[in-house]
Amino acid sequence: MYNDRVLDHFSNPRNVGEIEAADGIGSVGNPVDGDRITIYIKIKDNTLADVKFKTFGCAAAIAASSMVTVMTIGKTLKEALQIRNEDVAEALGGLPPNKLRCSNIAADALHQAIADYLNDEENKL
Image (tube, rainbow, N blue to C red; front, side, top):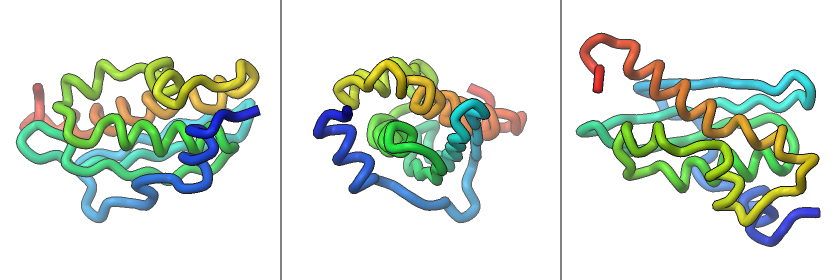
């Protein structure tokens, strides 16, 4: 069902955990599947210096969460906001059509974390 890259990010997820005193936190869920993804970000000089996640859900959701952290560490906020859920699935080498719903919330959680950070008037782009 899953390709080797998805299985790797599921069984050996990168950047798992919380960031103490995170600059932004984004949390989204998929009530149909029960998946929940929370992304924590640390910003330095308008760049994502650290990105971590906690996910409850299926292999696709965990793999997508792991991949979105890998894709975004070191990116500017503007670059990170351009990453779409489809980009995450593509970076994973594709996902079965019936699992796209599970994983298609990782970028949404990232965008919410950035919005949380930018919500502070001092941090506007």
